Every structure is written in structure tokens, then in C-alpha cells.
Image 1 (cartoon, rainbow, N blue to C red):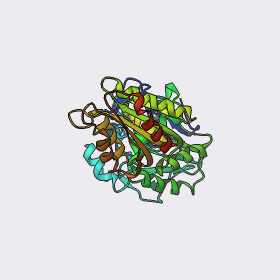
Image 2 (cartoon, rainbow, N blue to C red):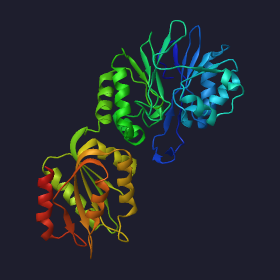
Image 3 (cartoon, rainbow, N blue to C red):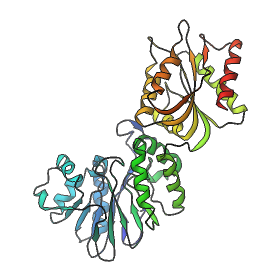
Length: 384
């Protein structure tokens, strides 16, 4: 078990069967639901987990408690993958107090039906402390990271930041996910819209001596914390993480794909780092990740029924709602009689902040021809 210390115990569980997180993000390696237990004069549970793993969580909780009973349940975040067992533990331990903030209370009442709930709520605000004995929890509000009621907790004695969804990842702990890969996809798709809120929380964290970061998904972080924090600073500022080009294409019969791959190879020959994605087939959450990772992007598309194909339209919509910005974008369009894909893609990109669309647009007719080489060269040069 991935415990933090003798006093701070991990009681979460892996879910290896869930295929879609939030019913939309692919989980080839599952996900973990993290929950923690502080054993002291006063015993405190920090968050519950998804109903899919109730049995494992209850077993871990009771195995650590033995004959003892928890005094407090801290509720950091009311999303159901963390709150689904609040009612379960509240009924099991009727004397246990529910530690929430003012924004949590109405949402808690919407998600649960706990008898006498008003008498059990212990409301905290920014800067409040909860004394457990040798351990003390400090509360910091983190609204819109990524729900309005989110708060994080800092434990003074062992210098642990319980970071809610912050610093979380996809991937079950059993699979030991590589943090940077699993966290980037998680951040850009789950938390990424709310960069200013993340920045505000990071500023609060700068004043704390943090030795351990304990998120609600993914591995507990104990070493080289500056690395993880620096990544969050970059991601939440909407600045590129790396120099490179992400090439995303939507192709029906393969000709637009061929043009996109051809252009990707041209860029690689110039020494650029390039990633490609087939938007008709590949995971859009992964595509969003790469769009945010690199400082440049190329979109290649046909039109379908006079509009962008659903895959390209959906991808651009995802970028828009996640606040994609501060990037340079090149366009490749394909049309057999009336090419307008570049115009349609530009219209979507103009809805985003600080997107520089390249002046040189590549227009191919049905398939790539040698006569298109000059246009490809012009776009390449503009992207360099």
C-alpha cells in the first residue's frame, strides 16, 4: 500500500475496469481514486472515492481503523468520483463531523441524503486549522480547480499538501503511470480551462514547506517536487511546454492524410520535433494534450457537406473550451471543387485568444501534386 507515513495512510483503490473517465476520456491503464486517513488523537479521513470501488475502500478504511472510529471526514471536492461514499461513511459513523467550506454545503446536500446533516457539518474557511493532536490541517480554498467548492489541505507536521484534483493523473497505481504523460493529458482535459485559478493556488502553495503532494488521482509525489510545480506553472499560464509542431488531420479517403504526413516529414527534416494525430480515429484527449504541449500546430482538413467534418469541428471545439491560446497555427485544406476548409478552420481559431494563423495556406485539389510544393515550402518557412 502506498502510505505516506505511519500516521498518514493511503486507503484509496484502483479501478482497472473503467474504460472512460467522466464517460468521455479513454483509460487504457485505468485510474486510481485516492483517499487518505490520518491516525492521531482525533482521526481524520480525507475524501472518499467513487462508488465503483466502495468495497475495496471500506476494506482499506476498516483495516487501518481497527476498533477506532473517525472523528472527521474532510471533503475537498464534491465530484462523484470523490464524494460517492460520503453517505456510506456518514451512516457507518454517525458521530463523525463533515468538514466542508461554505460552497461545499449546498452541493453536499444535493448529492446526499444524510439525516441530521446540519448538525454534523463543520464549516471551515481560508486559513482555518483543524487540530488532530500532533497533526494539524490548514485549509486553503481553491475555487474552480476545477469546481467552485474545491479546497486543499496542508498538514503541518509531515508537510503534506492534499491537493484535490491538482497534480492528479490518469492511470491506476498498479500500472505505475509515468507522471508527465498521464498528468499532462489529465491537466489539459480536466483542469486546463481554469489556468488563472490554478495560478492563484500555486501562489498560495509557494508560502508552504511542501515535502509531499497527495492528489486525489495518481501517484503520491515525494521527490523533486519543484519539477511538478514548474510543469503546473507552465500549463496554467497557457504557454507552450516545448518547441515543436503538432500536426492534426481529418481525412476521408487518405489524400489529406498523405498531405499532412508529407508536411510533417518536411518539418522533421528541418530538425523540428513533430507529433501527428488522425482526428478521425485517434483519441481527441491526447490530441488536446499535444496541442497544448507544443508552440505550433498544423491543421489539415477536407470539408464535408460544406462544413468541417465532425472530427475536426469537435477537436477545435475542445480546444476552444479548454482556453487554447498563445500558439501559431498553419492550415492545409483539400477540396475537389470548392476548397473552404481553411476558411472554416480560421473562423473557429478566431474564437480563441492570441492565435496567429499563418498567412501561407496550402490548398490541394483532391490530392497532393508536385505543383503544390511551393505552397508547402512557403508554409514550412513561415512556421520555422
